[in-house]
Structure formats: C-alpha cells, structure tokens
Length: 137
Image 1: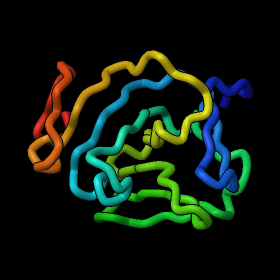
Image 2 (image 1 turned 180 degrees about the vertical axis):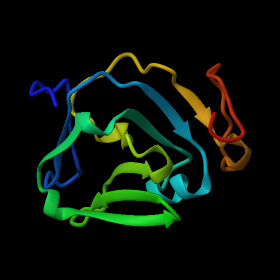
Image 3 (image 1 turned 45 degrees about the horizontal axis):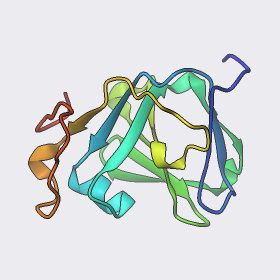
C-alpha cells in the first residue's frame, strides 16, 4: 500500500483513526433499513475504496464488527458507537467507509448516487437530481 494517506478519518471519541491512500472510487447515499438504523439517520453516506488502501492507524482494538446479514459486516467504535465501515464478502477487495467520519475535506464524490431508495424512510423526500436505484446498482 502506498505510504502517503490522501484521506484521514476518526470516530467521534477519537479512539479510532484511519487512513485511505487513494481517491474515493465511488460514493453512495444508502437508504436501506439497516444503514438507517446503523447511522440513526435517513440514509448513510459511504465512500468506496479498494480494501488495500484503507487502514486503521490508531485504536484498531476498539473496532467491533457486527454481521448485519450473512457476509455483510458493519464496523463501529466500541467506545463511542460511531459507524466506521461496511463490507460484503461478495466484494472482498472493496471496503466502504462512513464519509461522515472523514477529517480530510472532500469536495468531489465520484459516482455519488442514492441506492436502495425502494426502502427509504417514508418521512424523507429525496430532492436532489442524483441518480436513484431501487437496489444497489
């Protein structure tokens, strides 16, 4: 993995820090019920990168995984509960990280789209012009 981080992030309490050593490949606002519950919000926003470009640099012992469905893991900080990553065994070479945990400013999110809009919160209206998919595209 290249040694120069392009992006840095951390959990709410600062116990866990991570680095991403490449540009974000794609990004999505996920409206599935599990992401809504995991984030406590209308949707979760993730950036996707090749797994080899994501690494924890502090507090990995505080990271916990929860298997929300077979082969799907959601990681979070055991101290503050902050959502950190999402991964799926079907895409073993990729990892998605919660963009809300970034400390590095990002102005461009390639491929930003809404996914799983068929199960979005009924009280939330999508008002932007981003592409929408009933499931993942």
